[in-house]
Amino acid sequence: MAKKVVATLKTTTGKDYAKVYRMVRSPKTGAYMWKENIVPNDTVKDFLASKEI
Image 1 (spheres, helix red, strand yellow):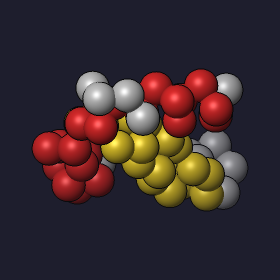
Image 2 (tube, helix red, strand yellow):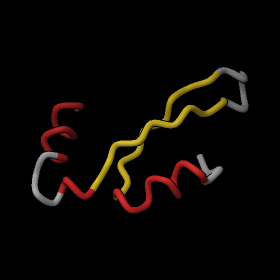
Image 3 (tube, rainbow, N blue to C red):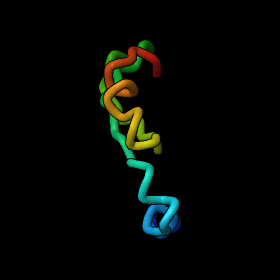
Image 4 (tube, rainbow, N blue to C red):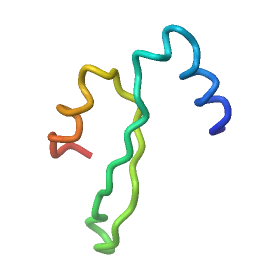
């Protein structure tokens, strides 16, 4: 699956997007886990600043 995402990001329209990883604490166990999303380059800082999961 990772190869498919990387290949998609290399296209001319894919250069406008970034893959963002965020560390989130699980409410159930209290352990940390990583969430990954693909967001437009313009909204990366807003995405990381938001508290949404």
